[in-house]
Length: 416
Image 1 (cartoon, rainbow, N blue to C red):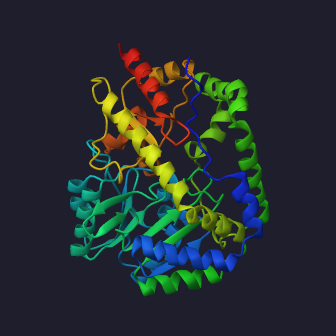
Image 2 (cartoon, rainbow, N blue to C red):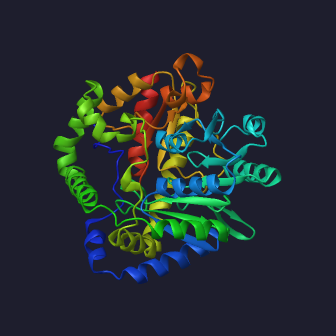
């Protein structure tokens, strides 16, 4: 029997959380601004309380700049919150399907969706390839449309070029980052806006200046959640107890626990923007981000192990005809936090793996047409297919090569 393999890893350590209490906020902010300028090759960095707050600010800027251009193109396979925000702000949302082969925004459908009312394209780095991002950037430049790059789960991914490393997050006219509790740079809450546009920079800074301090109650709740997760994910507690809670929740469909494991899955449409969105980044979050990014050796090691795990999954599972894998051009750039596979027997496979002690991510992103339309009218078939057939396997640095090989063995055995 394989040791229990958790899909969840909290990259934030308790030590970093405690050290952040005693760190200097100004030092942290200055370091991050300088570091992000160097990584993303952008002039202006604005730190935000959340990634979605950065997106909200950019949309407010677009509405003010040209109210007549009220359409935004978004990949249909996405986080529901990222579609709900422009919906509340009265943008006309054009949902474009995902590319079946590599998981990028479907470029042929993107071209057909652009018109003289198109205000922006939001490209979400879920499975994005370097070559497709270049193509999308060129389209946006030719059409003079603002390209917004959502780099929430792609931090650190890069392409090695003759001019050095080209990082994801550096393609957009404006890009947004996330440092939420489950990200590989984790600060409970946190985000950033990155751009070369002084106009956007000035608007964002002025907007944030009017925001309130981040809610202490919400922040304390997140700290408590972090401490509880750290406890339950400790090796002994996870193996003896927590794994079985997760397993039973999936097998018996216990919504109370599934809601905690997949909060985005139980999304509710909002009538207005939540008031806590209009808040500044907490000083503790600033210090946490600084202390993690400063430790480049640790980040490099985590990224390298994850890349090798993804390569092992790809090498073994690509031989299985019952599974579809996304085309990966570059494992440095498409270095997924969890390894995605697509199969029609997703539910049965997930249950089988749970019985073998392997936790998978059953729910990932969604076909966001369900926010805007009745199901009978769904057009983005590939997004719906990904929603129903995509399963993610654990790939973080606490999973070693032997475990990856064993997981692949059980998957292949299941289909035999």
